[in-house]
Length: 261
Image 1 (cartoon, rainbow, N blue to C red):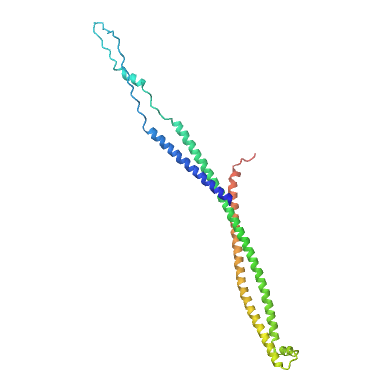
Image 2: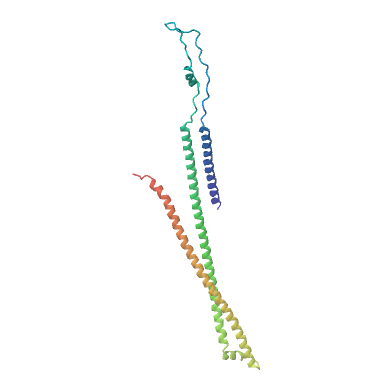
């Protein structure tokens, strides 16, 4: 029972760790998406235009040329502006794969622990049924012993009742009272007859109690025997299921092994 409770606690702890990992990864992904949803705009860089030399070039015809620096300013600004920061997709992919691998590992551990816990619970139920069968067999044996005792008591009571009925015959009462040596033989015979009738009533009542107890014990023995048969059939069926499950678990391992040449 302690091992089962420990396994159950371990299953709960692994499940909680899996839940926290998934929630943490979701929050991290959410924070990263919030950070990268609005890329930072490049800061404008103000550069001073290049100042032309004080010399004024002239053309061959003596005209003055005007040199403009307006076209050079965008190129300078674009060259000096920093490039926007872009997140590497390879890092995100590797993190997702690592997270998925962790989740798969934890899920497999939870499944293995659950299977082991189920197997231990099945073994516990089998042992409980075995204990029930043992108690049922002991109870049936005790009831049979009680039934045997009461049957022997019934046989003794019936034998005593037959003796009393034989002694109640008038010739037997006469023969018994002749040895008393009394001057009133009628009173002696009446007293003897009343004594035997009282004893007969007590034995008859006791015999009736034994008969009722015998009926109850016979019903109890039949019920106990049926319970024993039911438990034996249940245990046999459960044992066959456990053997089939264990053979199914070991079969893939043996099939996956390469055959020796």
